[in-house]
Image (cartoon, rainbow, N blue to C red; front, side):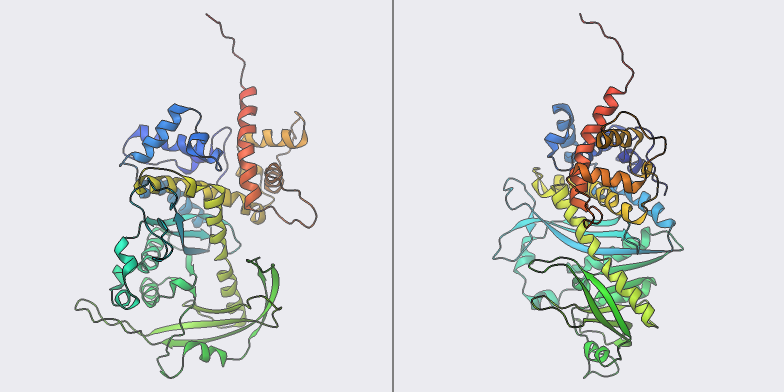
Length: 472
């Protein structure tokens, strides 16, 4: 890993190096603001900043038109691309979340985020998070944040269906796919992984045109080209069971976590293109060859929703081993839900009170990078536990952490590992580390990180050379 933090350098300085906002002073202010906000992720801007001067500078930063989403995210995208270059395969997980600012009536420029009855307002965020198949988040490769126009909420389903794909909100999936391929380094396999909302035929067409991998969970039971009376689900149900697999199901509302045994079927089909309004400048959609995987839970316990996944992919499936690999890729989609949890609960972005939607978008983009770092810190412990802790912490940070946990000023001769350091951070956040507790999760990490920031700042202060001053 080329992410070591040197001496007292903040990871923000490493991650945002090369930012170009059109003014060197703005570049410095962005990095300084990132350092302050990342050190106090649970705090408001006022609390995170050292004093009124820094607070005012942060608000001016988010008010500056030179500061855009693309410019803030650009250096992080460069670092993400560098981390991707060391991999043969990367999963680009796309998903959408809604950020509610309904209770911030003074913020202008927001849009509806639910139906007419809910009367909720905020912003829509569509994110592409790059992951390794082992579960290590490499970074955010693309992000779109916008406010929905009010008139879109009044469209009927028939009116929305007749719109060109470019005018539909679902076009976000195609745009994110194109942006992913544009930014991904050459020579690696990138597979975009999406949930049911991404079951958009044009997305398959564009993936085929770009020669890139795509895996989604289907929501529509599409018609087949060779037999219009038969559909995808019935075709794959008629395929023999290729084997069984154990899948861990995370805890849901009202349902405990469990290990489910599922049957796996797969087959190859050709989808018939759906109806679309005829447009003079567009060719009809082509038929689409696709591989289908059906995952069904065997003997599910009572009072739970059985697993029933219909997966569509353009990455060929020739064997049970191939099908199992695709299922494991889809399971990685859950990580983006954890990432959104870090952003909303660990960084409290929905509590941010700024005057306009444009100001919020700039602030949210910076928090996007901060949330990734907290998320990465949690999962590098699981993927690279024996790496030196300098991958995660600057020298003064791990020294302050060690001294606090062990209640000593005598530092070890050997550098602690990532696993040791991350578990110590988690202890600061309330992690007990009992035998059955497993590895720490994101909640104790973001709590512990905030405490570590205060501890390491104090450590650094008391380990500076003492200078005498005169009073006068």
